[in-house]
Image (cartoon, rainbow, N blue to C red; front, side):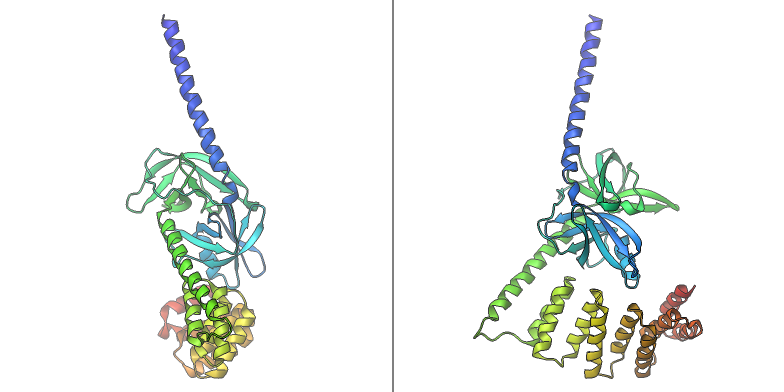
Amino acid sequence: MMIMRLKIICFSAFLVMFVIAHVDARVMDIVSNQKNAFVSVYVDDRNKQNIESGSGFIVDQNGAIVTNCRVVEKWITELGATLSVEIAGRGRVQIEEVISSRCENNLVLLKIKAADLPVVKVAREFKPRQGQDILVMKGGRESFAAISSGTIRSVNEKSGHFRISVPVKQDESGSPLFNAKGEVVGVAIVETQRGKPISSAVSMKGIIKQIDRYKKQRKLIEGSITHSRADSTPGIKTDDTSDFFSRGCAYDQLNMYKEAVAAYQQSLKSNPDFTETYINLGIDYYRLGKYNDAINTFKQAIQIKPGIASLYTKLGATYIVNGEYLLATDILKKAIEIDPENSSAHFNLGIAYYLSGNTLAAQKECTILRDLDKTRADSLINLMD
């Protein structure tokens, strides 16, 4: 009788293990089927050398991608750098826009120009608890995705971050975190505690809000475009400079720089002497990496209003990014002639001097900046160290 009971107990334990294994396999399959939505994110310098990388995943079929802030911050601070994502089966695609207005919880939302992309399944409601099972989709070069299982070790109620047992490297920061239903509930990140890297995760709540807000704004813009096209039909007068300029500004608010450029170009057809349009157009060319176009646009603005120091400063900064340091120094000197206390002009001039090899002149600009803007002075000194 005792032997029979032991057999029953053993059989029951085996049955429970079988069911758990079956569920795990099913969830693993659900997660694995979403691997094509995994991407690798790269920042390359102006010489096309990789200087930073991370991970991410697609949350919208039209190209919205979640990744970590670190790669975007590197892209912004590195002069002439490019930001791209690598999608399985599609190769590398350049970033079209940065949707996020600011970096929140170490996460950012990007946009590429694409359609019908594979997406992950996102859980709109999730409350992390200690001991919960999770799966992390990680990868490396060529967007190869591998799945690791683990648990939530602890939850920080104040920050909303939670530690996970799955080890995460810096270039894996931005990887999707799945629950037991195969839904994305968070994003893996690497935090530092007492000088040591800690594998953590951030909830999707903030990103979900950004996605919803972006879709709503996009819908409003698209409605505006449709209305304007209707006004463009023969025999109907279209709105002129102010309409296209306002639309360009609206696109800028959404970081839709290509669309903004098109709107500003239309604005200039109506009024080719509207300086503000040239300024915004030049800035957007700069954001898109079209530095020669930006230079020509700022030059046109200067021809219309040659007495604005900030125009020379913007042109000088673009020359620097384009590697034309001597031209930059000449233009920035003109900015300082107009406005001797323009700290931006002195800062950029210091950079131009330093990059052209004139360290003594760069140090003089540091001395001037100490009285005008100590923060910029310290930044210039750090750059030269």
